[in-house]
Length: 431
Ligand code: GTP
Ligand code: MG
Image (cartoon, rainbow, N blue to C red; front, top):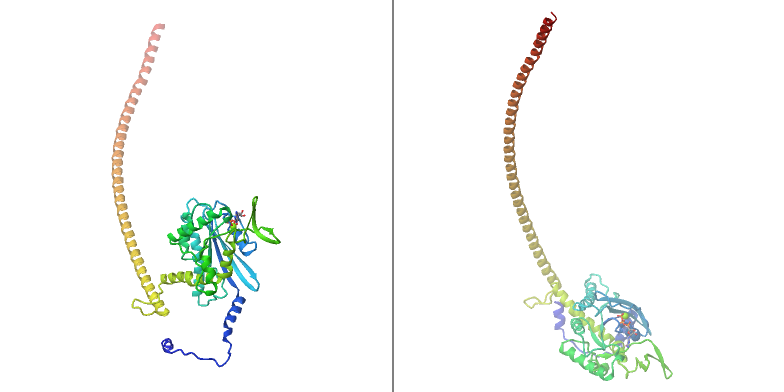
């Protein structure tokens, strides 16, 4: 109601009678921002040893922590490091994130994934903070990646398929600035050809790289001209040599030297100007308004939130939440019913299986019982036969013993008679 009343109210221009003070608003903003400090997060994507750490050291004129990667990583990893830097009275919380082991695996199909996941994880972290009831977006450390420096190897005639695939996967998530690393290792004419080839390949493959903004008049000219110099061919070094009476960063070779900050030698200065001096705020803004916004929209749509319903009427957050909650409860109920039905079916199945098993066991038991009875009968039969045999044997034995007894008796009477006869015969002889 209030909103429609306000939208119907006409705006009128009024003259101020004198200075009231709100023209200091930009200064208030500046001092507030300076007091708060700034965050800037750089992602360096490039194969092992391509010069990522050296370039970061050269860009910020300092020495960051550096741990050399081995070429034997089984998968790509991301190494974030955060530093507090100060220039004049401006505090910068800088996070550098380096890919470790990028391009070292035999199968490079999945190399982009950890990078994508890292970028999404930072968006998710910010979204979670935004959706909190008690949120503290101003003092939370914003780790969203503002710029991806994509290091292209100077060797070869054009981009590798790994470069194309990775940049294509990342271009809707992050601002990409492609750079040709170790530009001192290619001749000027080769470098010019390589730059043209890279740009035409990026265009033909539909890879969206970051374009320096040309809307703001103050930077339109320089940014328009810099857009034509992409990809920047850079050299990194923290070594210093004396040129005239000045110490300059350079790389020394047996045949001479190449100066990092000499625009005739490489595009390092262009990169530093564009990245840090002219477009740092635009990179932060693009990250928030374009890349994060896209992530947030997709995520909220995934969660069921939308701005308009089917009838094109605008939804309130409350209505959307209620609708989503109802949908969720219906879904939950459906799942619960399904689970219950599944459980009942499972119980029935198990019951039937158990009954079947019981029947089988019962049959087996009956069969065994029958077998046992059969066996018992057979054994009884055998026992009876054996007993009969035993009885018959005993009878025969008794008969035999009786016979033997009689025979023995007969034998013992006969020698006695013989003795009597002998005595009678010997008496007769003496006579
Ligand atoms: P990892 O972190 O191990 O993946 O390596 P990196 O990409 O950080 O490379 P680093 O900066 O450690 O440099 C690797 C080697 O390349 C070092 O010997 C550097 O001196 C050399 N190097 C770095 N930048 C350049 C450059 O612009 N030109 C030439 N010729 N060599 C460079
Ligand atoms: Mg390194």
